[in-house]
Image (cartoon, rainbow, N blue to C red):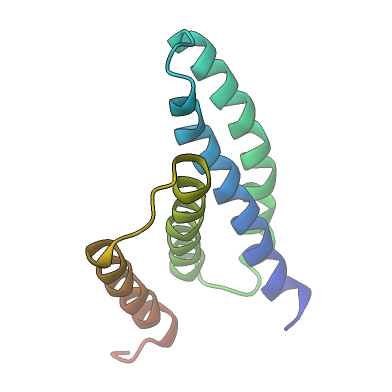
Amino acid sequence: MNLNAFAPIALLGGSNLLMNLAWYGHLKSPHRALWTAVLISWGIAFFEYCLAVPANRIGAHAYSLAELKTMQEVLSLATFVLVAWWLFGTKPGPSTLAGFAFIAAGAFLVFKSPFG
């Protein structure tokens, strides 16, 4: 796997980890003022963009836009599960896993294009 194919995956993984922390991490401190949570989330999101933009720029040389978006969504769900488990102790149940399996099947369709 060349750099143009691997780097977007790694960068999008890091990007989505940061974004999930920005979206949900503030829920661990509900006593903080909302404006503080927004500013901290924006600060985290800045670094998320520092990974996402290069991921897409590099990835456009190896993947279609649909493939890049699909990777982003799958990685978003995977990192969400990690953040929810790590920060909140929320483990995915059978219905969540089944839903993610359907999403994975959709990702397969985008990458393998069995219908042309």
